[in-house]
Length: 283
Image 1 (tube, rainbow, N blue to C red):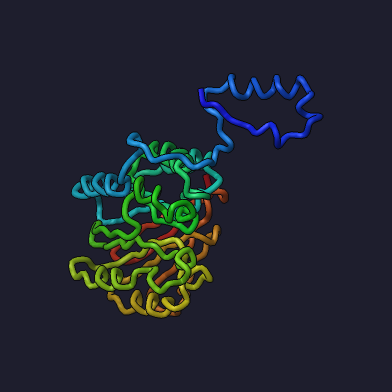
Image 2: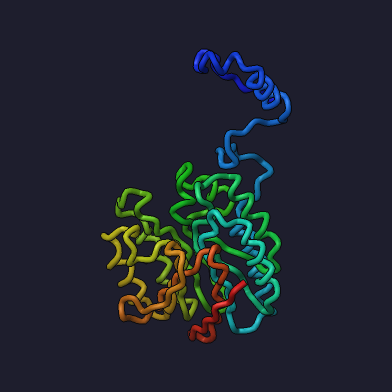
């Protein structure tokens, strides 16, 4: 039992005279194993947490690659914040589909970046029949600059090869860093796009470069890098809570934003020899 101390001097005398008040206080203190101010209160990181889930899911993905076909099939969604229960319907629908390689969640996994929220999400996503990967969103940075995300999912910037494609998952939440000119990490992106092993590139991040929460100083270098990289075909984002698809800079890169989980619709993307096929699927 955790004892909760209240200052009686801070309470009105009329309230202290009420027997009902003391009865309620006794019930609160003695009737609970743990007294919590809010389901969103911050919790300590403990050893029983899921750890490095992006790397674990990538290992699952790579293990299945030799038996997979040439098409890359992705379920694409974003912004699960505040709508954790609706993930159950998303997972149920995703598991009905065949030959899906992996699911991506384009950031704002949580609303406040708190451990309890990540538990709600990972418990539901663990029921997926395919691997899943997450980018970091601006809301995921709210508590401790994303320390819970790093503990549970891993690095904010990471990349992987799959079926002749290279995927660049990275942090674009410039506002959360005071637009300091370092997010996104252009040096990291330049290095990653020099890869000559693959034929095509796909970006995955939360804030799209044309949004006000992206660092304006980096918008042109960012979009120019993508356009100048041979085979860079697609940039996936969240943040706007609605689906959109456009060649935002009239170049070779298609920019997609995903619905939030609240909208109960994800996008099924098929990549076939550098061609992009999309299908919006309600759940």
